[in-house]
Length: 557
Image (cartoon, rainbow, N blue to C red; front, side):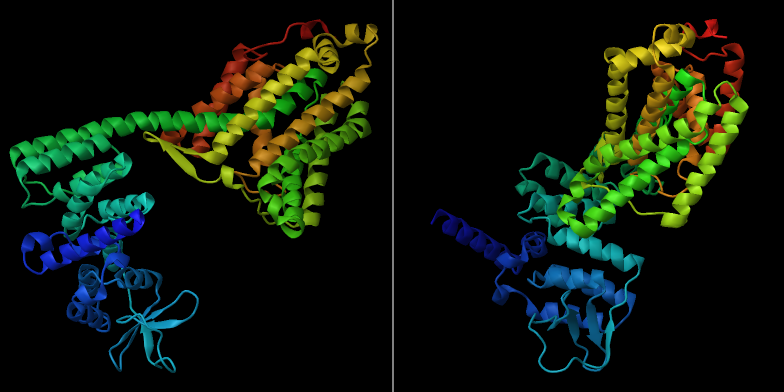
């Protein structure tokens, strides 16, 4: 019963507003279109003005269409939202013969726009869609924003406020005032106030004090859109207003510059995590065996294609498991890459220890073989790897935009790094690997099977490269050439950080990632990498063993 009373009270309030709009300009400024169409009684509406506005769509001129949008939105008719949405989607049609407007449903049916009833008989033969351009699209966004400012759904009210902010349509100002007075959600109310400020700041007939207050509110918002609104205000304003405007733009510019630094730092950490994933497997194989493995990038590629195959099987056999596809692909990618890596080590590399040039040429040949095998099996084109819902989209922290896929890759890289550190420190295999790294001859004299350790180390490094492929499949194209884009950077990270040192690899990856992102705005992507390469070469001239050199390797002959 309580719900019924509330519903009746809401209906009576809406009717009171409509009756008041017929007798005074103050009530007219409340704009009935701001109310939800379902709360309006059709008999209380001005059907004559609504029909007159609809007829303008049939004129097929942009000026008439613009006027028709404003008239339909101001009519308060329950069909206003559906008509304007149909215009936005290209589903609003007109007949040049009978000058009637029709609305095609998304499901395929047809209704008369004036009554909302399905048409009787066959469709008119001369139906044409109402044309739109950029000006009409802005008018559509403004109208839809005004019509949903008082929606019961906070999300729709927020989207409406954002639409009005972008359009800055002065006709929506009365509806904004009403919505602000009724709003209880702080976030939505702030968005409504910012939308009003965007209109008032550029309104010549508004009070100067109100315009200054609006400028200060936009200054506090401080993003690029707010700056665009302020920059669009023409010059020649009163002195106090011009000063407030200049100070606000300067403040926003300083804030945007600071956030740009933070954003570049985030991009650098994100790139560094990708480099860490690609290089960490190479660090342990190069560190333990001293093998220059040019096929390491192909292990990354195999991990990415394993992810693709897992998703293909899930799509065809068990679509409900798609959200878990990456969790399923991770162990499989590790296993596939590790087995291929062990086969390479046992079949080729173990016969070439101590011959670095032959090892380099052999692994380069293996990389070409693996690329061609994948190209023959899957084709040369990029393959699509989908992202689960939890890795899609982005969120903002102040002026910093963070994408979920990059954030999860950073977390994933941290987990792999921590897991590998723990394995090397607390397991028997890790102890033997560290012994072989420090002094192979002494480890062999202590009954450590160095050949077995070499095979397992190569398999471990290749398996980690496969895990890197799983992560890279979410941010890069999965193709036979995927690994080639990371092999040089991986060697650069390993050599810069210190061969065989995991902490050095971490510091090297993050340093090169951040430096690269800060160089790009000034030198460009290609020239920035060249500058970075020159810097690393000069650094290695001074410290040939990198930032963190391992002790004990110098005693080996």
